[in-house]
Amino acid sequence: MAERGLLLGIDIGTSSSKGVLVTSRGEILARASRSHETSYPHPGWVEHDAETVWWQDFLALCRELVTAADGRPLAGLAVSGIGPVLLPADAGGRPLRPAILYGVDTRAHREIEELTEEFGAEAILERAGTALSSQAVGPKWRWLARHEPEVFERARLFLMASSYLVHRLTGEYVLDHHSASQCDPMYDLRAGEWATDWAERVAPGIELPRLVWPTEVAGTITAAAAADTGLPQGLPVTGGTVDAWAEAASVGVSDPGDTMVMYGTTMFLVQVLADPRPHTGLWTTCGAFPGTYSLAAGMATSGAITDWLRKLVGGDFAELVRQAAAVPAGSRGLLLLPYFAGERTPLFDPDARGVIAGLTTGHGLGELYRAALEGIAYGVRHNLEAMQASGGEARRLVAVGGGTQGGLWTQIVSDVTGSEQQVPVETIGAAYGDALLAAVATGAEPGSWNPVATTVRPDSARAAVYEEFYAHYRALYPATRDTAHFLAAQQQAADRAGAS
Image (cartoon, rainbow, N blue to C red):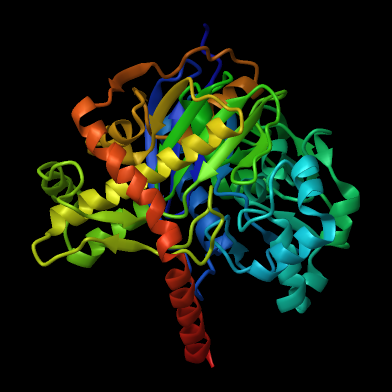
């Protein structure tokens, strides 16, 4: 394939942003990353400032990567980001408040119940494909109207991380079909278009963005954006998408049964479907490519727990992994529920809380860290079983994300699930998938960019141990749910008292 110009991919994540400069053959010429802070102003609230986090990260990454191009021509740019999020904006696209993040932000309890009653749970599942939960954008619009009416009254547009960048770069007000399909109950999954009647009831007066696919060119770099970024005016920019779906594209998850397991701040799974298969405990969405659908599952925390432990003890990940690797399967009798920020799929319980069962003074940091990895792996198995119950089939698991490094975590997940996982050469994630989407949008035929580097196979002896532990994992949540809900209420009351 002849070289068609270089491609840029930039992704805005929960705790960091990443970018790559790639040839049309998929060769990575340069990488860049920036860490940023996520705001937690109240329990259950998770926010980003669009200007200081999304835009400033984009500028820094873009300038670094454009410099690395060293004058070689650019062919296209694609962006992705955390989602679905709600960023209300005025008619000019200027943010009116910090963005309310995806399912980890659980503030809209009341609104989820209201809208479910208003439209009907069965009708929502049939039309939108997914039951309302903290992942849905619609209840957060209703929350905004109730709690911040002055912001809602000024809002005319709504943006996500990717569409905010596309708007600033091109002036186009668009949203990709996949991201729109997570704006429940505002998108009709089977019709492939906005459910305008429901959207008007959920967010009256808000202009809905033009729908595009992540593989379509949404617009081109304006003169103002060129001056800000160093990108050439007229450079094609794709429609963008949610990071997990760009990440799935980066590792060739594209055929029915292909399933991505993303090891990040949160654990996320995407399984490709040939047709919609709604399930009350999962998200059914459009895929990244026209004509495809997907089942998705997301845990509220995963890497966030391991990072919490690391910060708590002041250690580093390499040492934690070394200690955990020396601990046998089962963490010498520890069992952890990884619901440190509530749980998303398949429980949809924002008031679930973390539990460490079996703890004694004889346990050390290695046991705690391994128990965290095992608890997350049990959560992965729980979600894979929900996918199977919905009619999906995980024919091929592909592991991606920062948590694949070192091999311990992926091995534990394979041992717990009893499934092989393919680990590709590049696990940089969504930014690399963005570059691939840009290649498709600008007419390149990227083929297979990212071959399999290793295959992680389950160990039968450890799998037998985990089989027994998994049964107790599934029993531990219902056994502790009432206590967890009581404690969650106490936490919320303490926060309200502290804020008054």
